[in-house]
Length: 434
Image 1 (cartoon, helix red, strand yellow):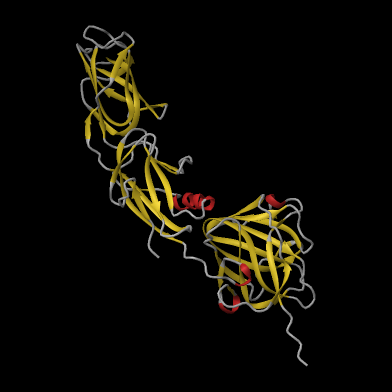
Image 2: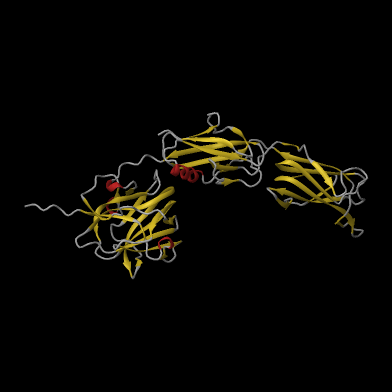
């Protein structure tokens, strides 16, 4: 299968290219070879340039009005029309105090006033460079340096200084870069100036797959790249792969499993089966989150006399490429036992192409379960929602959740009398021969 491509608005491949990220957002398109979800996706962004230049179009006022020779200022405010990556300042003073003058600097970044970091005080009359910081305004409290003793120790105290000009320097780096799918809120934002060293955009596959859940036939996914002000952003890297189309699975499931003699498979023809617990219309109003270090468990009554479990499936919505270990454990005083039954540990891979789908596997060998038992789902990667129903059928008991190896506790989504929806089928009895 061909790999997905990230395209510019004009249709060119975006990988390695630069484009102007605007405040309202610049369009990108994720082109898929065919309808279906992503298995993985990597996107790295970088500033196209870190070139420094004088910031023009600034407006400076003091508490005494316009900056001019002969006017003493205690407070100076400088504004400009966009958020930039500020990296230098020079305060020019006429007739500075004998021991010199300085200023305590604050900058307004994304609407919040913060002290200039790593230092917040700069001397007047000299260019002061610093690491780029996103800013749209600057405030300077003027300080007069006064001697404390003959040893030359000075202290900076607020006072009036005859400031004649403020010169600022900024880089070409974009600030507060964000990425969103279609018109959704951004799923990723970089706070401050974007560096020239590429940074990873986390969560792309998850955000795209959510869009594809709502538009399952889509082969073009609109993306929006935005910045606080128009600036060049480089698409340093893009790499993605789609989930392979699912093979037909026995029993109607769409997931697969592996495991030899102690596992299950979803690829070989099914043995004859009979329905045992098959919800006619599974519910989707409630769900329990399943992710690594967060396991779920559903209790079931003993199978009917002579019955053997042949296949099972969970009603899942996968949020990101999902894999899990399924176990069948005995019931110990109303809780899952510590170990799986022999031959009852399976691997489940579920890169599902759609919302709310039965996914499961066929056991290599049917299991006789003549006492209460638990079905445990422990994610090994990704995350999914296991749908619950508030009313459990007679064959299903309570459900539990455990986080980070902790105790089994009632699963909140299905409390107090619900269950995590599963589909169970039994091996059909062997035909009688005469």
